[in-house]
Length: 379
Image 1 (cartoon, rainbow, N blue to C red):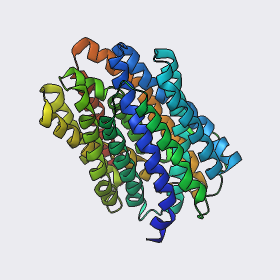
Image 2: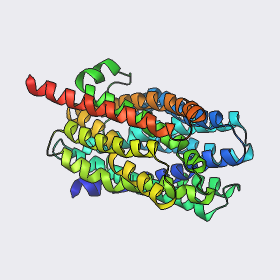
Image 3: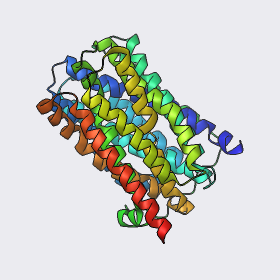
């Protein structure tokens, strides 16, 4: 309980940040589609976000080391506010790609601060549960942020302003906290070889999470439109994915504190791949489509949590920022490539191709997690 109270201010800021980013995230492809952006351009907006995040994983550790966790957090969020509120002033591909790239850079820094702080307060016995609570807060905020779009006209400037306001408010709890932040990172360099050596299953899991989540994050609203959902109902589909994520992540994290995290990973990704294969093979609409989105979130969105927890089990406290930034870097590599690839596949083969891609990568990590687990057992 003491650990959770020490994280209260941090989680309050996380809630506001994720709500603002989720509102902006679902609004961007929907508004772009309404403005007549081609599918490839919409996919590239998703790639721009994760490209900025990739750059942020390289810049975040030295910024945190120089400014400290709280001041770095405030600086990152301030840039994010500017990126969001400027978007409705110039609805064209290049300025929107720049704004999305800036927002991705900001959230790489935010995640480095937040996740290293959380993992510094956790132990191997409760890391999965604590990280899952952080993810639960994130997913609830994301669902709320996406659903809030139904209150606004998507072709107006107001939802962008609300998203920017939520980001700005996130600075307040962190600025007012009395809890001491973690120690500054000793190393500011990206150590991918070291990361892959100490936790290969985590590196692979976060890459797959980036491939699957990046494509769905960027193109899920477009998929829903193409299978016949009304624009006003699209947030119900994307929010259902996030709602499933929120309900599934804590049981997954708590279970992984008791049995090998890789076994939990394999079971859940196998179940998620089955749901994605059903979406790829069959045409759902209305309530059944929303339910399928919920099932995908319930199973597959715990992958990043499980991967990060497994890596931090094997790390020292001063390695937490390096672990967070390194895994986020791997995640971004997958997430940069996948929206453009998925948009090309959707254009060639129809909207179901989005979930064909997701099925393949989740089946791959199921097999790789089992292989890693049983290879260790034989040693």
